[in-house]
Image (tube, rainbow, N blue to C red):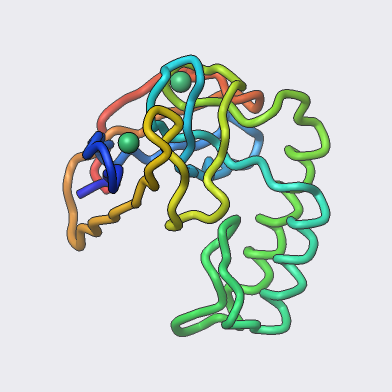
Length: 169
Ligand SMILES: [Zn+2]
Ligand SMILES: [Zn+2]
């Protein structure tokens, strides 16, 4: 379970367990996690992905158009069944994300040290450079299907961690 990173040259390896991360906003929003190099941790880390307002709007449009070639980061994409019934709540979700984004002042933060000195990977599961050695860091995702206990962490709308507790998910 979780996400791990390995450098192709120096074999630097780091692994992060799954945590459900949400913002403490009026409507609970899922924090988008993104691989990054954190200059304060001086290590591979996970950062928030803070989408541009235009990206929120364009993903919502793509959802309505059922564009299945697009990668959906902000909400679950229009896959699976009952997408028509899910559309109104999904559009409300995008509206809430846009409202949060318009009020957001800080840049993306590292999820562990809260620094904004992070270089986000160009794509969610793509490679990115390891500044120590110039090698490329590869991302590996392992997915768990089933019910288990996992941590739920709540962050302020500016990306500061507020609390964490165990939940069944
Ligand atoms: Zn390396
Ligand atoms: Zn950090």
